[in-house]
Image 1 (cartoon, rainbow, N blue to C red):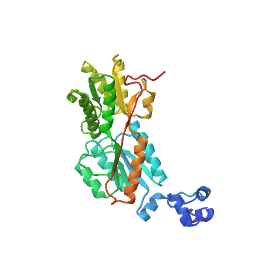
Image 2: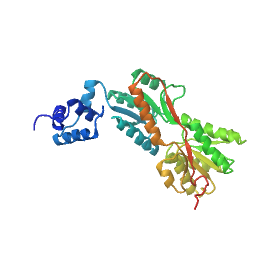
Image 3: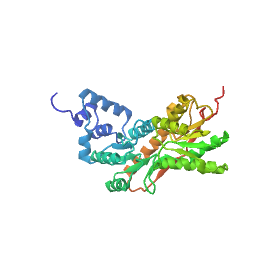
Length: 337
């Protein structure tokens, strides 16, 4: 058949109205599973492919959401995307994911490109040094958006993330319970507000225990395994190791522990990671970590963004989730035999 197959052909082949067929291919409206299966079968038999690009030009609407992450290789973001994409798919949306490498200039370029695709909204993990031009352009675009896991100081915008002050406190309190009296916080850089909040939580726990918070050793590094390895080497160069090390991410914790193990100095150091990615339980020793449940955060971010898309003038809202400490063995606790 030389003529292009149309949606009208699909509807006739499936024995439904064109409106019903349209609802099936666009993922909108209420359609029974039996009818949906019949339309999909008709599409396969006729070789029909829905042209979403043309449809969005006609309607000025799109079901694509732009997602900007800082580090696509970070397993935390991989798990977050699982939850985000699942929630979007349930609503008939899909994502277009790009990575800024935590570079604010690259971030601005990527957001401009995503706007050219007429995305329905943006889920953004802001680069650490995002400036006023980024915020001004974002507000001027009037594209619905939500910040995920990272927020910008003094900026009122929809936000989804963990309570990082509580997360830092949970880690410190547990290590204080082990009798630790010297602490280090490793990973991230000073512009990271999540890092600042976690350190604030650690310091508040130390102060409550009668310790001087100013004695907390801070080592900056990228928030991945390589950064943790470098930070671990920096700790070793200081000579005396702290009794307790709290890390900005699980990846940093993996790298720190490897550096200590290579140097033969891992014994006696108590270590806690952050995020509780899936590989944390598989590490040796199994990593104690502050669980932020990235899949849950991703799903919540998608749901909030969909609300922003549906009602752009609904006002600013945020969803902050309490983390939990998942105790394994790297902190000095032993699994019951």
